[in-house]
Image (cartoon, rainbow, N blue to C red; front, side):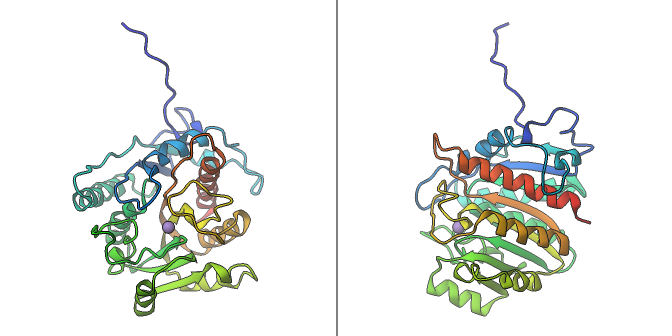
Length: 296
Ligand SMILES: [Mn+2]
């Protein structure tokens, strides 16, 4: 038999067999390297691998909690590959697949790694179908993604929120690049905008955002929410974005005050040779898993 190069299993945080066992896991990671409609500067299909690779070098100990969130058990699934023959077919397939995935994982916490932001529409639709009461979506993003289609694609990354307004309310945090048409949509729907320019004076926006969130919350985190000085590796960077500690402080409050039923982190487009953004996203996911582990 030919010698094959040894490859360690692609697991979040590089956990060993026991800590990554599905049976004992409280969280399941689903990589979705889907990229089809990205408007400028592609590369999001390499996002999930970059996050998983970087996560192997993140310290397992969390100094803020004086504990090790990995002990909750984190299972990592193989990447979900979707058809590229038209975004509509891919998005319908994703909604079906993710629905089955939710049914199979039971009470485990689902974490999807993108990929472009269009994947969030089917994930939210499948989640809403299985959620008691109205689902609240907490979207951290420079953009509202409330366009009724973009460049001919109804399921574009710039439209994912518009495609789910019928099944969920939205709180959009960090907005700083929207069109007049999107502002109209915000005014006429259950969408609470937290504009980025308001987030620097004090933390009042955190109370506003929390108040607008319902009991059950799905978090969709577009990494272009962060300031480009922290997160240059994304297709459409915008100045004036979120910073690290303020963002974590807010998200910890969300996990404490609400039931977070799902999470996706999207739009990382790794820059070859520039590792800090990949580490940032890996650590962000680990921090959020830590918040989840301490929640109800
Ligand atoms: Mn965005």
